[in-house]
Length: 241
Length: 107
Image 1 (cartoon, rainbow over the protein chains, first blue to last red):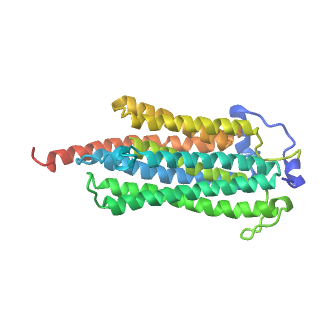
Image 2: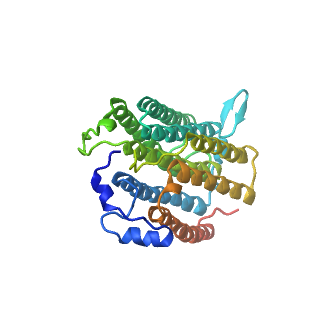
Image 3: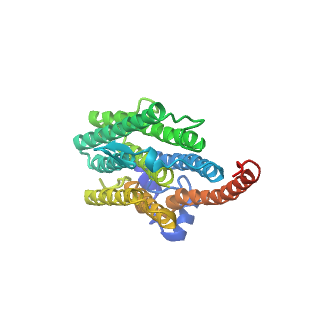
């Protein structure tokens, strides 16, 4: 990132660490988040707000599950697949988990190769990430179809127990799946820019007209890892609990 | 590239974390597979969940290499969600209690 020289002249002083560092960073003029490009700080703040959204979803799930007098359906049995003559519990969800973790791994490496200016590897790894993401959404579509068509789960009721199971399930996994889908879309857009060399030439973006940098890949990575992070919590609280 | 504001680390660390995430996901799946129950189940689920979340945020999202000003600005506010969890626990216990008293079928 050939940052303009202005950035260097603004911060000639050595930065302090620890609590003094926090105070001096926050009280300094112009930018509180040193070392962090503008877009990355904004993505972190967006992710913080998204954290609250998913927290509220999981909290509402906790509340209805704790307060219902009807037994909660057993996710281990509902999400079992019939393989080789026996029911394997939660197997589809486990595979989905591994797919999403793998996509996070390839994304992390894409960010790394981006900063090394290795356009080919960066593009390929981002496209692999997108493919994993699309696989995840596909498996989720399969899971939803199975639940809705074969087992008759609806947001307002299901044959297994508490009616709130369906409403919270569709809302939480639906919102997460939407995040994954949009992530796939943006992964492809950013991968195309990397491939064309937009970030080597600092080509202005089509929407914001800001000069392109490889930071865009890392910012994309932050979003993608966040989607993986949310799945960790959904997996623990919804499927395993 | 003297003045790069991005994060550059050896690839090996990502592969390590990737492997660890696989291992801990397998562990949490096994918790369900072996049908562990009660406090053991919940504590193991939470433990593996926190480890995985920590690895993702710290290494994949590069948080451990950021300055404290950003770390605290992003990581402290979600902790307050725990207060909300506490509030809603009381609330749902109360709702469950009143439902048990007034609506539960005679048995």
